[in-house]
Length: 221
Image (cartoon, rainbow, N blue to C red):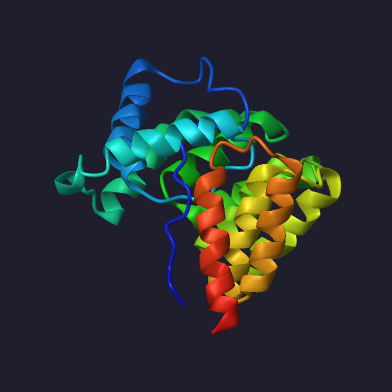
């Protein structure tokens, strides 16, 4: 099966941006990290990313694809930088463990740093308080996918679609995981055609139509 490049996303958060818990030095560390890493990687959609944001992210990453390739960080360096950036948020959680917004910010931070097992842990914690939040469930499912759990990812996407049946990012991600994770091109096509039917002005329509065409070829093989 031909692998397709998943959508690229901006290093944004699902909720409000981190507030006074961040120092200027920590914000700088994260900004540098995202510039070096974020625009060169193929990502599924974050659950909360709007169509306009994902279109902008795709265009930005396409124009920057050749930049930063020589500045790759080691896994240890990535982990250290993200842990440092997350430290003030984790300190907040020690004093207020029920602060769901901060839990989500920590999860988003680990997601953007490709520390997906940590992201899963915090998204799952947040989902206990917000079990009907489709953006959160999509973020959790996407993180599970990146840890290699295709079935877990699909389960979370399906939960999200119960609460927002035509969520573009969820349907897009569901199609990717069905095709690449479960070798189910027909299931992928179903999700993507539903996405386009309910979102006729989808910014990435042409690209998605190309994916559908490829999936149809695979289904006929």
